[in-house]
Image (cartoon, rainbow, N blue to C red):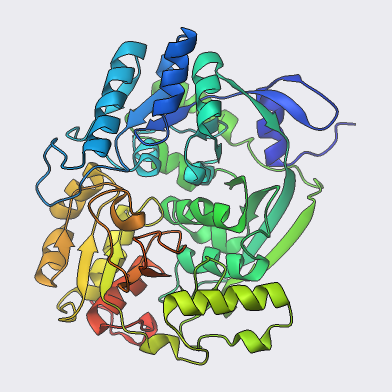
Length: 473
């Protein structure tokens, strides 16, 4: 009798070229990879030095996203010489090795984890590796994605394979209906708070449950994207009719009979009944409230209606010290109501929350309102395609009328690697995925939350509970 297998097992088994040892190491075939200008230079240099070529150039897609400026008017020129060289070197490498490139001025340009799904470059059942930890995003499509280092990028380009160690499996079941004002961002932030920033280290997470089923594909991407912030090396969901509908008309999705054959196979991509997981976690969506981070790690998170926690209440000495350090860096005191923390900046963007549905959510909050006088608010769409769609739907006009800066696509203020950098002491309500010290600029303070919550904070001038704002049609 065939043993029941998890979806993770099926992904890995179907892509294993050979077993390498009895400790779980295998040679794994990789279907696709996405390359950016920031993590690829050394890999290409290594190929050149070793006089190696790229094994299957058509399975790679390159994009400029990390270092490019996002000023409202896009130009190819960059003031930063280092960033400009990274961009030009990527163009040279793509030309020399035959890899397709979406450069800064390409209408398909955007953040890699936004443009790959919107192009249909990632499909259910694929195994995807790329030089960015948030490659886990693709799990929302029923693929299995994970981040790799520069030396692994070189090996992948040269051989289409990677040496890979199998992970343990974790099933996270999320049940119940999300209340108005709650989003998938609140779900994943609550999970990270529950299991900790290292709670999923060594695991691949499969998300399931009625809450997940009810979410859109874009909302699911947010969850898979941030699963890495709990330490997961992979995260995914079984593909369903929503995924098939999302992919059907994408430029690189199969067409005609190939599409019908593909969907027939994709429907088989699910965990077998009776398959066992190494760990089970449950989350009650009905009990959730809007979440915000108060510290310098994504697991330092709490409901907006509560106060900054007191380190003295924590018995673990190391955790207590971490909390004190975080509060010192963030300039907060125990007991302060989270909804009274004044911000100086509001940022909506990143590979976590810059898709069209995220912008629609934010626009519903700010329509007819105006950004607080002391707040600088920015909207950075996840791709040029998202930007164009938002303009066509009238969302851009809503943001501009409300006092937001409407910018070009890119990673932008998610990380201090381009022109969009916060100053020491700045405090930002952000829809991004990481709130580490210095993540958005040396000495800058970041509070993570959903795009709608960021929009609400921008209007109020401080962190606030979106549930108490009157929604606009």
